Length: 265
Image 1 (spheres, rainbow, N blue to C red):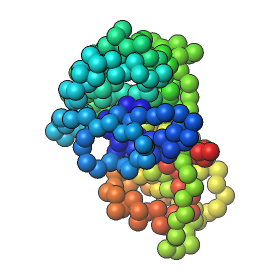
Image 2 (tube, rainbow, N blue to C red; image 1 turned 135 degrees about the vertical axis):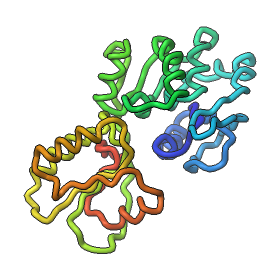
Image 3 (cartoon, rainbow, N blue to C red; image 1 turned 120 degrees about the vertical axis):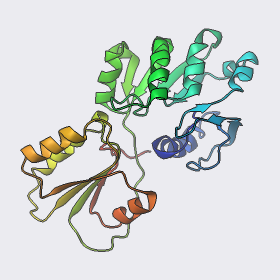
Image 4 (cartoon, rainbow, N blue to C red; image 1 turned 180 degrees about the vertical axis):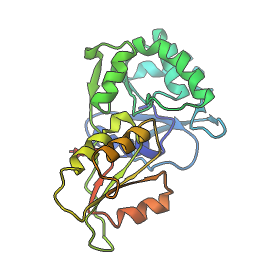
C-alpha cells in the first residue's frame, strides 16, 4: 500500500482494509513521516521523509528515488496506490517501466471536477499523461468510473468498489426524525439521488441536512431542492469542524457518509 496522505477518507479506508488484508497477505504500508492522520494497524509501516507544500495535502517524498534504485518496489506482487493527486503516485507511474510489479490505483474521488488550486492544475496536467501505465483502477462509484473512461481508460480497466463502513453506535441526544449527509458535494457521491429519494419520504416532520464542502455540485443540488419544493425540508450547512461533526452525529436518525453503505466483512 502506498498512501502518503492518511487523513480523512483515505485514512479511514486504510484503517479498515489493512487488518483484513494482513490476515492472508504480507502487507507493507508506505506513507509519510508526518504526525497525525487516522491510526492504522499494520505490522510493517515504512515512513519516508516528506516535505509538505503549504496549505496543501500535496507531499514530496525525495527518498522514493532511493527506493526505486534499490529495487524496493519489485519485492511486491502488487503495488496499490491510494490517491491520484499525490507525488508518490506521479513518481511511481512516471517510472513505471522500471518497476516489474503490477500497479493498482484507487482514485478515492481525487479527480472531481471542481475549482482547483494552481499547484493541482499543474500536477494533473503532467500526471494524467501516465494513466495508461496503470494495470487496473478502482473507482469509488459508477460516476467516477465514467469520468475515468472520459480520460481515456477502457471500461475493462476500471472496477467500481463502493467504500464500506463499519456499523457505529451513536447515542442520540433527542428523538428527531433527521437525515444527515456528511461528505464532499461531488458528482460521485450521488447526493442528487439522496435528495430525490427524500422527496418521496412520507414522514412529514423529517428533515435532510447536507454537510460538506462544494466540489462543483452545490448549485445544481440547490436547484434540484427548489425544483422538488423541498427548500423548507433540506438545508445545506457547508463544511464544518471536527467537533461540529460529532455534535451533528449525535442528533440524527439516519446518516449517509458516502451513499455507499456496504459493510466490510
